Image (cartoon, rainbow, N blue to C red; front, side, top):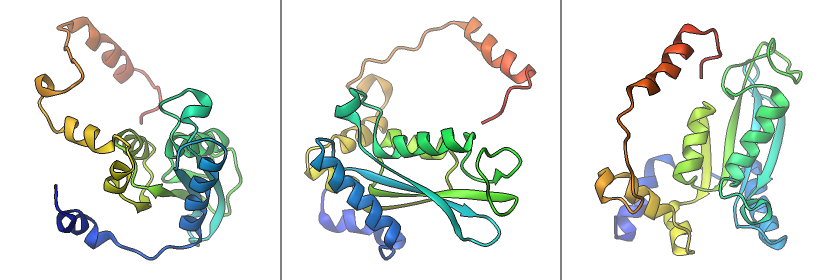
Length: 191
């Protein structure tokens, strides 16, 4: 996708006005830079399912350089905080019976605000956490213009395995399926 017009059309149908949560996410991104981190921030908002009122929120910034952890993006960091405090791994349909934190009614969910469109890793984490709403300010193209490799990853994921920069092998090991069979037969939580 080369032209500015193509880039803009990608986002045309999802545009919304900024609100206080987005302002907080962008402020967290700027604060991150001021303390030596990357320019990314995220806010996760915990919302009551019945009333739609905000119960609480978490704020995080990028910690990649601080923690020497390439996975410590703002979105991942805020999801980890919330999941740990709530005691859940699913941030949609959070039942008051399983949550570690009080909530006014029986069900709640979380919505994520990010200063920039999440990279593929963070998008995957958002989906795994089953967060039903994502709002972001800057795009992957904005991140690419500033030197971040998001577009390289998006492009590489669209390629066949043998055309990717990362050398990928698939081992033929039927016994590997045993763990899935054990999991299916277990009563372990499903996610």
